[in-house]
Amino acid sequence: MKDSHGRVIDYMRISLTDRCNYRCIYCMPADGVTSLCHSDILSLEEIERVVRVAASMGIKRFRLTGGEPLVRKGAVDLVRAIHETPGVDDVSLTTNGVLLPKYAEELAAAGLSRVNISLDTLDPEQFRYITRRGVLHEAIDGIEAALAAGFDPVKVNAVTVRSLGQDFLAFAKMTIDRPLHMRFIEYMPVGESAGSHGCGWGREDVIPSEELFDVINERAKAEGLPTLVAAGDERPKGWGPARYFMFPGAQGTVGFISPLSRHFCSECNRLRMTADGKIRPCLFSDVEYDMRAALRGDGGDEAIGAVLTEALGAKPDDHHDKVGTERGMSQIGG
Image (tube, rainbow, N blue to C red; front, side, top):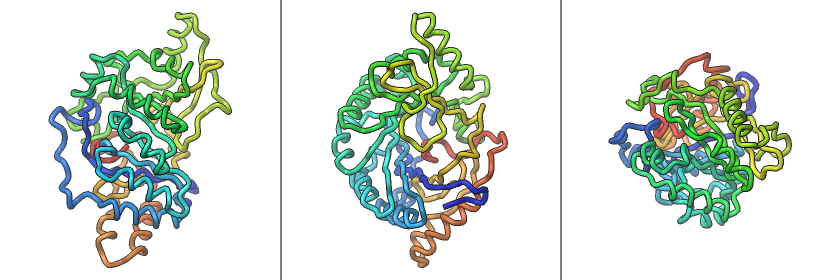
């Protein structure tokens, strides 16, 4: 499928739930957000139906997100159903990793090919502060479980926040002797138009990727390490906009995702579906199309296809420096 700007759209991110077992400071306030009613959330059967229609229209790759997708009962069965859908090439998952020791092998057997694990610090005390309830070793155990299950690639995503003082070199060094792909993501203003539902986003906390690249190299040189070089053919498989580098001879890579300092809208290849069945053509836009109404109406698969087509036609060419959306990240699905 192509949008009105000639971009090939072959990727959909699907949020399974707005619920999460963490309360990360950049994602939601300490007491969480008001959870959607059960009847407002798409059933797994409804999600499967959307996938079937989307795949028939040219969407080949699907990523399951949340909240935390693995808190949704039946997530493994959904992975299997999507994997077996004609036209689907790849199924992946974004998770905080806590439940991967329990589910990684089942997910791999069901057809999940890759995982992205969110991890914003390697300091146990800071991890507790950021997540408000998490224990660092649980996330580390999740990374180990993902590697043991054979997912390829295993990516680790860190949101970079200046005021947190994260140890970025420690993250980058994880890629030297293990096949991990570390990605640094600029802190985005998502939720109540940059207020981030009380999470306190501000431009002063954004670390542009170019600056971060220099910081990592400076600290690497200070420790006697080589500096990062372009990853080239060593870059991991994926469908996103990250730019990848690596330490010479490393098993993994270091990537940078720059939604604020370097718009990659011209490369955008995706649609998003929220847990309550709204199709979002753009992360930074509150324009949504009601898939749930189509699923529960009398229009059949044609109505589902019509919503996808309408959303596709509404994808903007760029977000033109617009920052902030009314929904929080846990509600959008990333």
